Length: 287
Image (cartoon, rainbow, N blue to C red; front, side):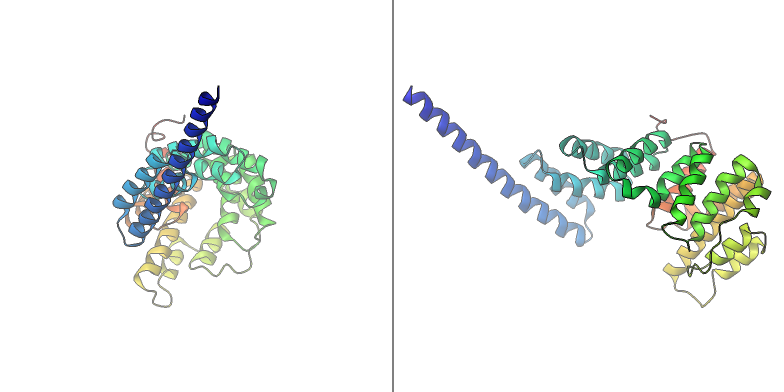
C-alpha cells in the first residue's frame, strides 16, 4: 500500500515539475515571439508562438498573441480557431467574443459576427451603446431597424462622430428612403478628422462629391495622413452613391478605398466586405 502511495506521489510531483518546466519554456518562447514581432519578423513570431503552445497547450497568452497576429496577417480563419480555443478556456470573457465576431465579419460571415457581438454584450452590458461594429454588421445583414437603433445608442456615447451619423443614415435610407434619412440626419458639431465634416455635408445635401475629395488635400498632409484621408473619402463616397442607387460610382469609390488606400483599421475590412458582398456574396459562406 505504501509503495503504491509513494509511486502515486512521485508521479504527481514529476507531473507538476514537467508542467512547470513547460510553462517556463512557453513563457520564454512567447517573449521571443514578441521580440521577433517588434523587430518586424511576423512569420518567425508566429512560429515561436506555435512552439509556446506546444509546450503549454492551454497557454492563454500564447493563443491570444497568435490569434491577434494571425488577424493582423489577414489569416482570419486561423485566428478564429485560436479564439475558439480561448473561448473554450474562458467562456465568460466578453472581449474574446468581440474579437471572434470581428474576425468573422472580415470573412463576410455577418450573422455569426452578430451572434458573437450579442454574446459579448450579454456578458458585458456596458458595451452595448458603443458597439458600432454590431451596427455595421446589422446593416450588412439587412437588419436596418436594429442598425439604426444601434447607431442612435452610440450617439449617447459619442455625439460628435460623423461616421455614426452616416451609418444611421445608411440604415434609414435602406428602410425609409434617402429623403427621410437626410431629414433626420443626426446632428454633428465638429468632427475634426479630415474630410469628415465634408462627408457630413455631402450626406446632408449641402456639398458635392468633389468637395469631399478636394478637402483631403487641405493643409498639405504627409503621405500616410493623405492615404487615410483618401480611404475615408472614397469609402463614404461609395456608400453615398450606393444609398442613392448609383451602383457604378459606388463600386468605383469602394474599390479605390479598398485597393489603393489600405489603412490599419477595421473600416478597411468594411470596404472589403462591402465590395465582396456586392460582387457575388460572402467569403467562405456565411456559416
